[in-house]
Length: 90
Image 1: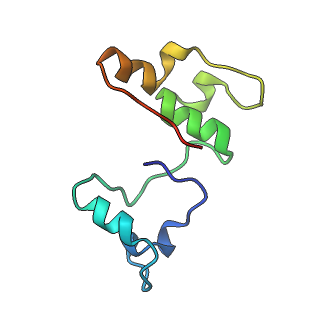
Image 2: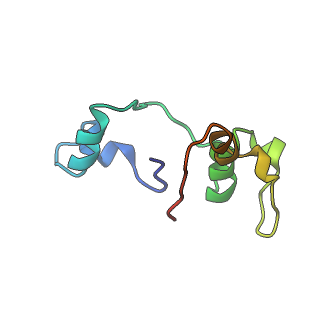
């Protein structure tokens, strides 16, 4: 699960006093969670591309609309070769 534009300090998963994310808390019991995750860029598109391509922004250079990356450079390609089925909801 990748979330964008959500302040971690406002989630009950990360200690917020109100129960704001009960389902994430339940999900986190059997998952790996991170307390010090950082975005590779200040903008959504290059940051998410880095996550899904496993490359720094300077490597994939996807910083403006209309630019594409090679599909074999994505996590979906890697998983597909290992017979995983993937999906994306945005």
